[in-house]
Amino acid sequence: ALFASTFWRPAQGLVRALSALMITTVAAYAAWTNADVGAPLDTRSLSLSILAAGLLFPFSASAMLALSAAVLAFYFVAASSAVEAAPEAIAGGTFFLVGASVLATIAALLSSRLREREFRARHQTEALLRNMLPEAIVARLMKEGGSVADRHAEATVMFADIVGFTSMSA
Image 1 (cartoon, rainbow, N blue to C red):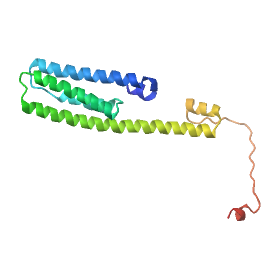
Image 2 (tube, rainbow, N blue to C red):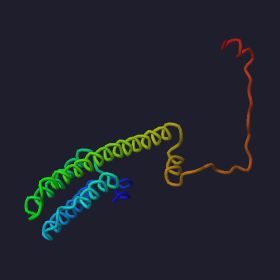
Image 3 (cartoon, helix red, strand yellow):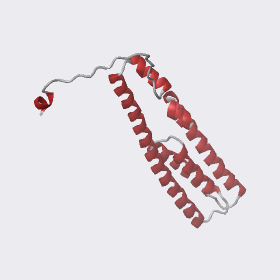
Image 4 (cartoon, rainbow, N blue to C red):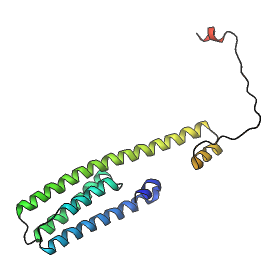
């Protein structure tokens, strides 16, 4: 998902949608499985899924907030249907989930800003190269990278001096 959304722009929307669907499915499964067992609700798996989404997947801050809200909604629905859900346990779980959501949203905000800066820098570099070099050389640089200098067996170098240029320019 990271590779596709970073290097292949047309796939970004699809990758983000599939990632969000996968994470909400995992969160729903974890919440309902825990509630069906009848054990006290455990928020570790839900917190981990929120943190993993914010740190590993290319979500914007608003998408991360929406995803966190969906996971919290699953938690509250599962908590209301759990048999032995004490109010203190639900409050503690809510605290950890909200904390994980805040951290994940901050991580998503910072990583999306970094991706945007990298994209702009790449675009500006390409535009600068296109202004200074012939199109064939720019195409080779973008394709091959590194040095694209051609080898010439013989070359002529000319040095010139304009008489009085230093005093004229001063």
